[in-house]
Length: 266
Image 1: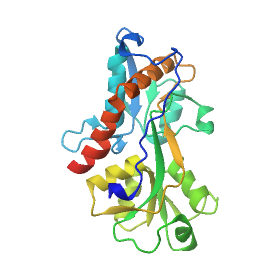
Image 2: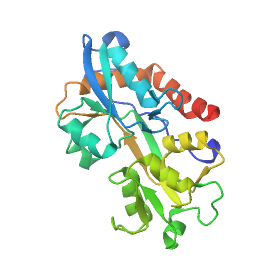
Image 3: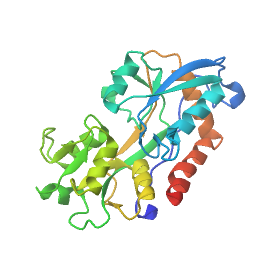
Image 4: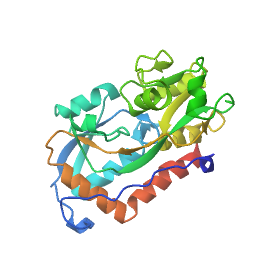
């Protein structure tokens, strides 16, 4: 299934305020500073609870823990719902947040972003036996088809403006409190399609290859970044660490672990 769509997990080259590419030896030393990081644990394989231990695991956990190691800082992990996360980081309740958060102009008015750590394309996830549509137009043309989405997310806005008619109150969009709940609704035949980036799609198909598939091609692309309290002094150190991880192959190794090895093991 992985070969049937382009898994766009290429990380971007980043520009940082420390000049040329920073090696580990050149990275800032934050002298053991504790940073409060928040996520949702509902966006496999980026962040989710290990079903065996309940511990938070995933690509973003590994990546940010490695950033902390390189910058000599400690991470105090917290959980929050998606709909409260950006505002909580904006107010300084948490220092940094992550949940596959797309960098866009509207959010940049509220909070600061790190440089992108991942680029992913949006796809249509459907049940494995779906045969009624295979592209956005065919979906939009059938008024009986429903899409599941979490309000305020890129998935929701893509459904509104790139698949349907631009009406954010369109009754064909069924809203769910969490991203995982929309996928469960898809599995249960309560909705007919969920839009998601390639990273999440790989996770869900890897965990349940007989339940889901991707149809059609990519619908746009998005860059993910860590969110930070406006004016945060963590932005440049984090950007430098992302750059060093990209250059020494660490991010490639995380991609392999969570988007390929994870798929083969679940």
